[in-house]
Amino acid sequence: MDRVKVAVIGPGNIGSDLMYKILRSNDLEMGLLTGIVESEGIKRARNMGVKTSIDGVQAVLADEEIKIVFDATGAKPHLQHAPLLKEAGKIAIDLTPAAVGPYVIPCVNLDQVQDEPNLNMVTCGGQATVPIVYAINRVAGARYAEIVACIASKSAGPGTRQNIDEFTQTTAKALTAAGGAKKGKAIIVLNPAEPPLMMTDTVYVDVENPDEQAIRASVEAMVKEVQKYVPGYHLRVPPIIEDHKVTTIVEIEGAGDFLPRYSGNLDIITSAAVAVAEKLAAKMLRREVVA
Amino acid sequence: MSGTRFVHLVDTTLRDGSHAISHQYTAEQIAAIAAGLDEAGVEYIEVSHGDGLAGSSINYGWSAISEEEMLTAAAGAIKNGILTVLLLPGIGTQEDLEMAIHCGARAVRVATHVTEADIAEQHIGMARKMGLQAFGFLMMSHMAPPEKVVEQAKLFESYGADVVYVADSAGAMLPEEVKARVGAVVDAVRVPVGFHAHNNLTLATANSLAALEAGASYLDGTCRGLGAGAGNCQIEALVGVLEKTGFQTGVDFYKIMDVAEDLVEPVMHRPQVVRNAPFMLGYAGVYGSFLLHAYRAAEKFSLDPRDILVELGKRGMVGGQEDMIIDVAYQLAQKRGGA
View 1 (spheres, rainbow over the protein chains, first blue to last red):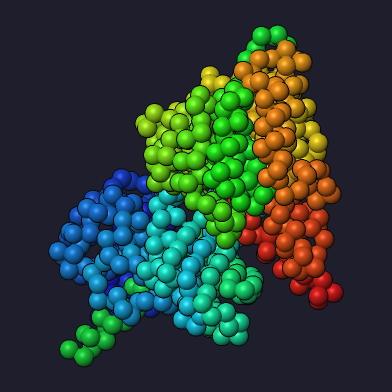
View 2 (cartoon, chains in turn purple, orange):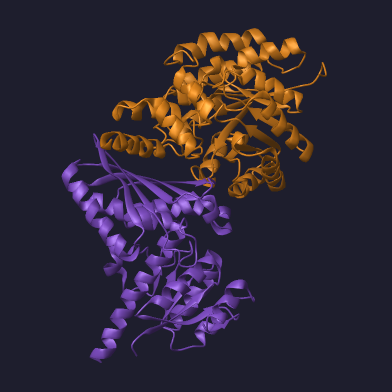
């Protein structure tokens, strides 16, 4: 076995973008895209030669070779899928707000949580901002972190729109749980400007020790780490320090795989999910070689 | 105009007005002003951080006291009026609304950018379920053509909003533009329609009258016009103008003037006049709450605040994007440094 077989549940925008990224991966084999009805996404995958099903999670459970499963459905379906996948010995990478397992931000805490059967990808805002909070916290001590995520209206799907509180609440929790801040707050703004704006995230951190040089170096190093799996991740405004307040602005340009480039918010979460799967896959492949 | 039409007034001195004093109201001030407004006969008394529930933050400015303290102070002072809160989905959540209801809020205005009403469905639904009056509030209405405003107003109506508002958050509209939007919404929905004016182009009262002409029946104002940007429609003046025009508001003209002069004026940090930068907000169509933040960024980066505001307008920034003021100021300063 030279690649690990994976499946994607949910053939919408996120699921389709995941599929494109998996097809490019050296470690992952795109084994199955599954939905619950015949859809555009299913048709597209089939035309590209990808195995598809409309039996939902059952199709995943029926294939023993599938080791890693991306769930790009919704919180409610994932709550049903999670125990089934666990029982079948498959690792779940959860892109919904269900948060059955711990939050994972690849460049921050993947090593600590890599043995968990279920990993939650937080939110796009969390993937974009937690690394910055973590980078500032490790050198300056974050007493409070607050982020403002701006997303192009066209890039915010019905799931986000109908559950916008979930975005702010989940992101705020991740700023403390994974970012290390003592308190967290998240704000999201949708902007309908044409042409659509790139996703921008402003990160404010109230720090104990406002050492400008250390903060800048730590943030710049972290941006390079994120760029390894999200090449379009950039510092727009490097850390500005006023008393104990640090202001940093990042911008995320999408890779343009399936979604348009302005959809950096979707790209960062699918890129992070694939980065997690690749790391897990590399570990599985090594283990097999050793055995 | 009909001589006996009733206009419902919403006073937002203790919400929109808080922008102009950087959200520094004390519980005593809130209690006194709320009691005064109630005594004067104001129907809806809005109390919240300027950016709505949970707006207290680095991005929008910290409130002097917690929202719970603000609302409790106001609820204790209001006997007849309806304690109202503002909620911007993306900033405040249903949990925050629950807290407000617990403190005595009886109406909520759920505000979104004029093209994004569908992020408010849950909040309007919750308000209705909890027995609150729910207003749908379309901010920055000047940025969308009347058809789009109508489409979004109908969404709010479909979620169960009792009233739908057209808000000129940037104080950027001319009376004809107000009439076009308000009139189109009045024709399209069955619920009453309101209008929220700002005075950046010195048209707040004129625009409020234009809205009534187009069929609106709810209007907003603040004492002394205290509010974001160049301020709001000055409510004590509006009451007088409406009386002269032949409308009824249920508000005592003298009493509301007294609230403005005796209670609100002493709290103000500066007179609410239309200086250059606030005028530019209206001219460039930029969200009113950006003003004081733009002054601070201009000082930090040695820029003209007008340049910052014009650039924000060009970029199409919407309400809530105060963080982009830093971004614009930083980019302008870099550009100037490099030239």
